[in-house]
Length: 170
Image (cartoon, rainbow, N blue to C red; front, side, top):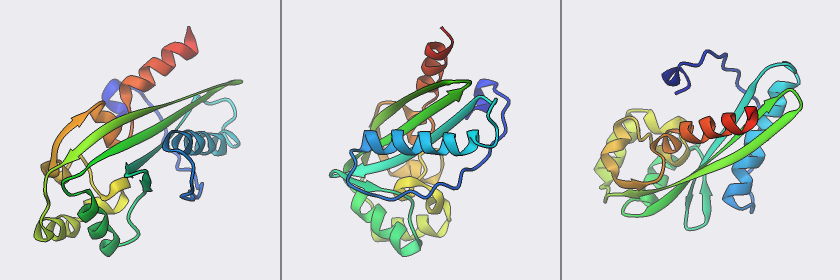
C-alpha cells in the first residue's frame, strides 16, 4: 500500500511475538505497533521507521491470525452475519520522535455457509490475516458493508499514516 502512494521503502519484519491478553483493542495495537518499530530501530537507528499491527475484534474478543485451517474455519464461522471491528495501530519513529495512533473500522459480514467458508479456506488467503479474511481478495465477497477506512481493513490505514506524517513534520 505504501508503493501505491509513491513511497520507496524497505520492508523488514520484526520478530515480536504477540500475546493476546486483556488489553483494550486500541492499547493492544498501539503497543505492538510501537514494539515492532522499536525492534527495527535497534538495527537502523537513523531510519524513518513505521510499525503497524492489525487485529479483528468480535464481541470484545481479539481475533488474530488463524493457527491452521480449522481455526480459520471457526473464525469465519463466528464472523458470519456479524459486525466486527478492525483496529490498526501505527507507530512512526524518526530521530528522537515517536508518534502513534490507530484506526478503527466496522465490518459487516453477510451470512456464510459452511461450504463458502471451506472453499475460501482452501484458497489459502485467510491464513496470514487477522480475522482470517482479506477484504482486498476473495474475502471481499463476504462483506456486506464497512463503516470507516477500507485501507485499515487491508492492514494499513493510509489516510491516518498521511495525517501522522503531517503532524510529525509540521
